[in-house]
Image (cartoon, rainbow over all chains, first blue to last red; front, side):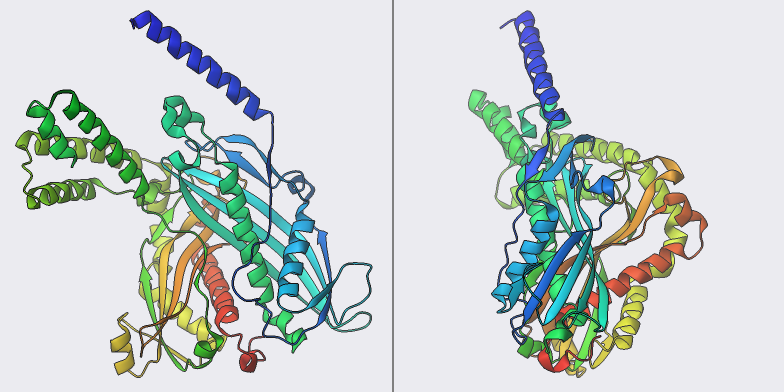
Length: 222
Length: 289
């Protein structure tokens, strides 16, 4: 193979790669979010109760269109936006419902009667981001909500509290995407979808944990 | 291994030797990449047994700081990378391991490795030392000094745990040995490891150079409760706490007490979450409200 052939081969690979990148820039990454609890229910040590649960979206408008950015792993340039296959409000509602039900409590959806405990969750943040640093990529998820809870409905005292959860993980650049396939891979490889899902699902687990261990919420079950 | 590979090639191993050098080099690069120094993922490593937790009476708090204050706005680990000294120690270890196995390591290979390590260390060091993150870290060191030690963080945490009545009794201890704790009448050791703390970019923000860069305080900790009598881990969690508020880097430099104040706020978050984690036995639920 002579120098001319090598040069032509190199140009073809680059052109193909640029085509791929151009395609990537215009699409979104859709992630599947599911609450996957482990161990015993966090509220299983409390007296069983019927809970009316409602989750509403209080996030700023600009944060409702997408839940994060997928970045280039080497220099951190934005690659494409991340969106959830299921609306985030529903994801949080399902997660809390699963945790309450596996702990022996019954959950009523909005419009299906009144429970012994009424919980209104106002979602204020649901976001993912990543930060590059040479061979390391830091992945961070964050979920925040303002919660108002009361024993029943009507003219009863309410308690309010904020639940904040963050989850951080690190992956190696080469493990997140096949950066070792060449120099072009290192310069343009992006955080993989599976890592984004893992971090957001981890954040969800942390959110439910913080929510269920909040004393202001737990005291309604005593 | 790499050095023995070189020696095979030099001894006339031919194509096999060259293949071996490539294989070893790739393995070394992969090993270097995989051995990156960074905190692990968040979450619970050991779930508490409510029975064990409810028996806690006297707690000895031992604080360790793995990585002190640093600004990590441009790159995540700029302030934490190994330096020239560590590179050369690594090379020395490789040579020592090879010699202990009876494998001869040519002087040329050692010299080449040392020069390579030194050049890499110097280039890396110059890049890191001239980075905006390192300059900002140096500029904020006086502001961070108030909270940048195991002692300062330990005293702040003891105050917070006592105020919130998280444990019946808590005191700072210098040793992390369960046996030493038991001798002092402490039934549970609380090892509070600050894996790193400093300033990071808020989620979704774009990096601006200089004092305009947006920053928020972060604290990454490993929390572990150990029984002094049995050395059994009762509870362990890795927690990542970003501050809920963000400021410009310039604010942290110009507003006296802002950095220490935000650290106090984040330590309070750690205290509250720890309280909720460990203080949830039915008989204690009325206390934390």
